[in-house]
Length: 97
Ligand SMILES: [Zn+2]
Ligand SMILES: [Zn+2]
Image (cartoon, rainbow, N blue to C red; front, top):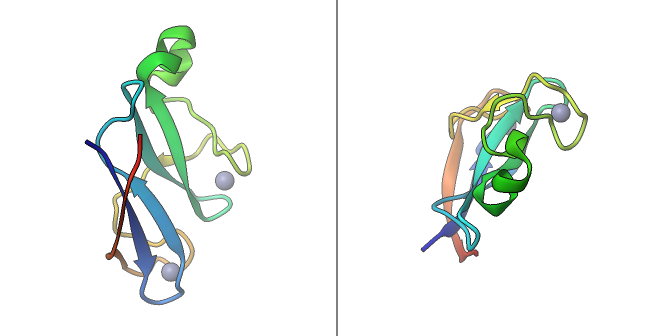
């Protein structure tokens, strides 16, 4: 079972979606933060795609989906990439596969 949750920054209103658990193909989605374009990017890791393309099986060496930066790192579920404020989980919760 896997849920998608929405996080929101209390200071600037920036929203991020976080996928928990694993999807249909055994993949998981890691939220990573980009210091260059100040966004959170959901990076698909592992699963069937990881078997075909080994570079997809870890978070290492992945690029920002928006600006192509290689400086992205795993988000701590807390710090807003835009204003460095505090992000909080909302009540929004959706099922994903
Ligand atoms: Zn913010
Ligand atoms: Zn970026």
